[in-house]
Length: 363
Image (cartoon, rainbow, N blue to C red; front, side):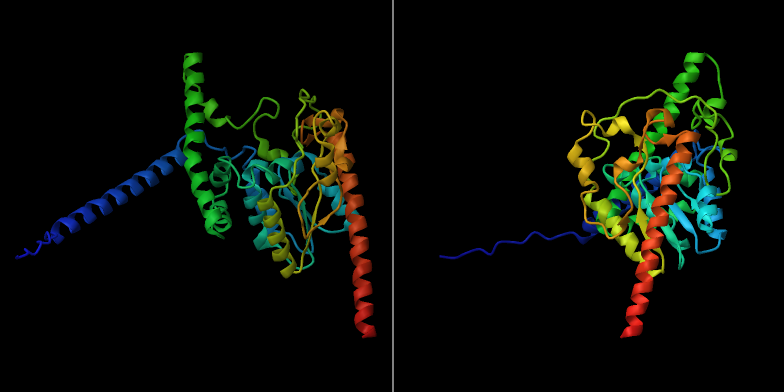
């Protein structure tokens, strides 16, 4: 009985190379198309104006880069922009004060990263994050495009913040994916508004980031420290209750804060955390779990937490725009509490430093 040897089909290396070349060409074309699409998305209106609210980010970074240390550096979202009297804190502690707070939707990851290059020995970094960026916007939102439009170096901070781990990098890719839809939705909304008006109105593109309550040329309503004062004297906006504002801190947020604390400590700085201001009604049992409030942040943090949420809960009449934007009266009260908490912290750390020095001498 004879057996025939099965013939192995010959592979055409030419065809394999052709397929590989076609796949590579398709990938390069798709990549180039995506990059061109992103560029167009970035360039088309609406874009953040040179005198708009977000343009203050450039001024804040300039002051941060030029002010001397030791300084007190506040980082967080717009609760700081609207509700901090940096001059009062500066005269209390005789140290320069920088207020970097501008937009919570930039995300905790970016907010911590953008100040790292300017943390020096003797500095005190005060983290005052909105509750949301400790929960569901740790990694930011499409609003980050505003930072890129007004302050291009923000792109470096974004890349650095999101390339520290593979998980963070994939979150960056997801963020990039969401950027075009947000920008094109704004573009479409403005065109629809013009269609309804029946005429071309370029001011809609220019003023798209400006609300009726704030007005134009917002950049001029920030002082040198980074405090916003454009809402002074304006009537408070309607109060709307918010449910479950205070929840357990996300574990990723806790890791980011602890890593930031470790970085700052290595640079000879100290880091503390203070809760943001909210209306007292938001912390009632009908709106928020008493357990969540009492156990906040419900994560192991290495930074010193100077207060619980209820200390910074104020009457609704003290808010220009709930839940985080205080009016001028609320700003003064809140700043006074911050000064008291910082004074207590500085006193404790000074006593501890004297004790440690005495212990070293005795040894």
